[in-house]
Structures are given as C-alpha cells and as structure tokens.
Length: 540
Image (cartoon, rainbow, N blue to C red):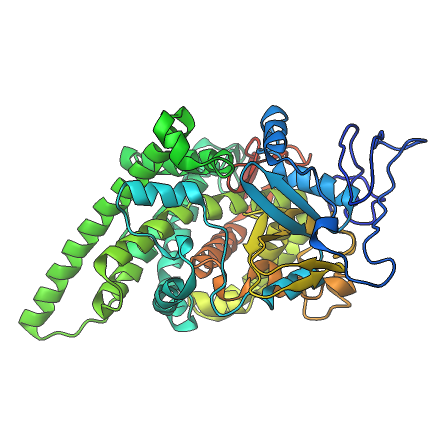
C-alpha cells in the first residue's frame, strides 16, 4: 500500500522543521538553526507546567506584528503554501499557536480533542470567518448575501430552509438519480474516447490523460442538473464557451481570494488595485452566468406550472433545488438567487479537485482499488439500478472519499468563534476569538492517525481498533467531514457526486498512474495539485 512521502519522527506531524523558520513561544527567545544539531530548537511548551491555566498572551505565536508577518507571506509565497506553513509551525510550537497576518488574527489548533471543545462552544448560531472580499463585492454590487456570508439568526433562518432541499435524506433520494445519470454519461463519453484514442486491442484499450478538464465539466454538469433540474450539454464534442468561462471565473475568484483576506477590500477598491479588479470581475461573471440560468429555469418552471393549472395535472417530476425553493416560497426570490449562485460557485472546484486526488491515489494503490471495485461490483449487481442502494452497499466508496479528504482537504481550515470562554491546551481562549481547526496538518498527524501517510480507506471502519486512528482521533470522523450545523450546505450534493462517479469509473475502468511520485500541492482558497496528475484508464 502506497504511503504519501514524508519524514517521520516529529511528535506532532512526522515532518522535520526547516532551516531558518524562526518563531517564538511565550517567554522564550529563539535564535536557532532548526534543522537539528547543536543549536536545534526543542519545542518546549511552558504553559501549564505548574497546573494553572495560562493566559491568552502566553500562547506560542509567530510574531506580534501582523504587517511584518504579511510582508513575509508575500515575500516567501506562503499564501500558496499556507498548508505547509501550518504544518511546520505546529511542528515547532506544538498543537496550538497564535498568528497575526495583516488585519487577521487567529488561534490555530491541531488535535481533535481541542476541536471537539471548540465546536461544543459554538452556540445556536455558529459563526464562521466572513470572507470580506466576497462580502464587499456583494455590497458594492447590491447583491443579496447567501448563507455562506451570513451569521446569527438571519443565517439560521435561511439555512433551515435550504437544508430541506439539499441536506435531508428525502431530498438526497430525489436528486441521486440525476447525479447517477450524469455519472453514467461521463463514463460513456470516456469509454468512447478511450476506444477512439487509446492503445491496445479492441475492447481493452487504455488511454493516459490529464482528466481534470473533463472532471470540471462533470462537476458543473452535475451541479446544474441538481440545482436547475436541467442538463447543459457539457459532454458534447463542443461544450459551450459560456460554461467554460464560468469555470475559469470560479478558478480566478478562488485564486485571488486568499491575498485579499489580509487587506481592507474597500481600500483596494478605492485605489483600483489590479488584484481587487480581477477578483470583482470574476465574481461579476459568476453572477451573470448564474442569473442567466436562474432566469431560464424560472421561465421554464412558470410555463410548466401554467400548463399543469390548465390541464389539472399534478406535478411529479423533480424540478431541482431551484424549483423546489420557488414552489415552496419560504425564501424571497432575491435570497434564492443569492444562495443558488453560491451553490453554483462552490460546486465545481470543490468536487472536481478531490476527484483528481481520488483517481491518483486509487491508481497508485492498485490493491486498494481492487478491494473497492469488488465491493462496488457486488453492491451494484444487487441494487437493481437504484443508486442509493448501490452506494449503501459499498461503504468503501464513502471511506475512499474520506481518506482523500483526510490527506487533501478541500479547505485547509475551519473557523469558529466560541460564544463563551474556553480552555485549550491549558490556555485561556476568550469568547469571540477566531479559532481555526487546521485540517491539513491534522490529517497527517501521527498524534491522530496511525501511519498517517498511508492511503487506506479501511481506517474508516466501524471499529476503532481496525481503522488505524489513535485514541485522541476518535472524534475526527465527525469533526473533519461534518462540522455541525455550519457544515457546507452543498456537502450532500458533492459527496454523492464523487461517490457515484467513482462507482461508475471503477465498474468500467482499471486505473493506473505513469508516476507514483507524490503530488505537489498549492493553495488557492482550496487545496489543488500544482500540476494535475495524469491517469491511465484501461477498459475492463
């Protein structure tokens, strides 16, 4: 079984600190070569040695001047490697540290026990960090904000309505057949391409490609089918330029977001900063594309309702998330548009990119791939064409997605603001402090997982003894992929998209990789491969 490459030995991460990475713990002066040897830094946590709770200011930190830290981020390109920066920092300072970058301050934590305590203190209206560049765009363009940008009672009210259409089991049952249809069509398109362009004897041809462009089209096609209840034809030989521009706009929006988080967006707007202009233009195109599709869907639904009224027929066909929200009328049309646009913008890269990682890991772990395939074949043959039964009978599919997201989390942090004072690692955290659960280093921590660099979906079994998680990591299953009431509103759509596509790919193809070297990753707003992996698809 392949392991993700890495060096072992660190108590926290199994990654050795790097030379010149200088930080300070409270009350400690550090001027050391961190590679090891005579002058090596030893991570000594002084907080709590006498049994008392230490103050907030005593939490180890990376420097008190946020603007100097911001300059370091720019100079050393830490924005794109923030996940690695966090990994190194935990290795040096231990499982909790403070960081201030520009205008943004946070406490970063690693261990599931601390994250569990954080989530128990989030209150009835969990608050997440507002992505101010996104919020500023909505304000200057007079757009309503969706639940992603809301907090408090307003968030809860809207979220409860959305949950009925995208999170409940009854709603998942309605849209699973739509996702299954798109997944089958994707595999049909891929089979035709392998047969036409591949090598080998007929019926067993193989083709090595970068599947990422096709996966982005799949994600958009599947999302549109669920959200609008219609297909948009992205698997044709000449997919629309309009849809391709939407994908490009989403990628540009994600790329320009992180640097803007640490600077006042209004100031950048006033001075006409190119970074802000690129960001706003990308959002404008996303809104334009979404509004056009919403308008077409609204006209189609209105016509359909008029025909049913004239004939006395009752509706039975699933009309997509948009149609369900419009028919129930619990949200205003403007709020529906805002949330549908957010669902669209968040439903492409966050599905397509994990699928790239999943195909790569299955390709370089053939024994894992075969184990998942055998379970899928048995389940699919017994399901009688019911996609829900097929997925329920193949739990290794869901475990594969969990294992991919453990090693390659879409978002590397989750933020919460506790509504009461809490104590983490024997340090006092005041209410209202932004605390970040850092998923990338947590997923690769030997404190949380046994042999954390090994790709093994079997670790997500029902028995803690069997699944390769350490005692302190038992809460990781719910923490890493749920996050309580504030979990991603499109999560059910995305996880079922990925499971269904992997199911049909494994039924039709054997996967392998030309190179089993680890994928280098960059961070935009989500974790992505620096270069998309090439995958060999061989027809079964």
